[in-house]
Image 1 (cartoon, rainbow, N blue to C red):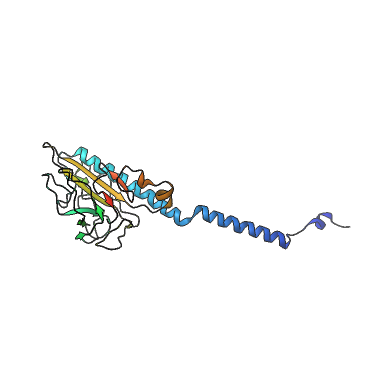
Image 2 (spheres, rainbow, N blue to C red; image 1 turned 90 degrees about the horizontal axis):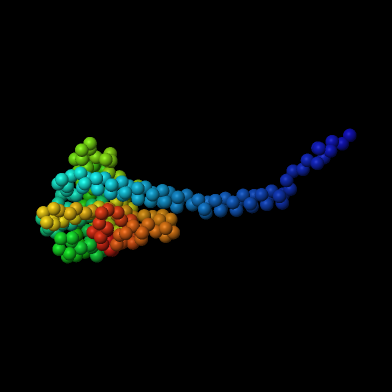
Length: 241
């Protein structure tokens, strides 16, 4: 007696197998193209960068609100302008990665002095605190504001560092360097100084530099950087910083 069930059992033909393999290959290419692991990692780092700078803006803002005698550069008189209204020739931009503590040839049309309205020179100082202690919140880190002086201590445990945090040439930073930047001004006005600061980061993902370019939507004056702070005109336009 013939078993009909056994008779009807058939395997895949070679053609069917080839079709299935081709479909799997096409789907794999589509998935890789859509997901793009490298782009996904870049986007993740950019999200962290924007979050980090927002956290720093909040922390420094809290410090300015709570302190009767704030100092936006506790490590050195490094704000663009000090409280007496005199333009400093010390540090201009602080970096979260190691850089030569010397004159940097900035290719930048820098922002105006909020005391005099004068525009700073295109060649000024840049500074980094060293290979250790960059994340310190006591005024010696790359954001030299003593957040530890707040009642209850610093609102953040450490200053965040860029996820990549590298500078190609120590004395010639550019807009392509994935590193955080900080600068400030302290304006003497009517006996009550005005304190302003700016934080910058470079973004790297297509999502946030092309599709939804956050650098052109942050309210700043430089489309090459993501800018945040209480004054986004301090550093100005350019690419060499």
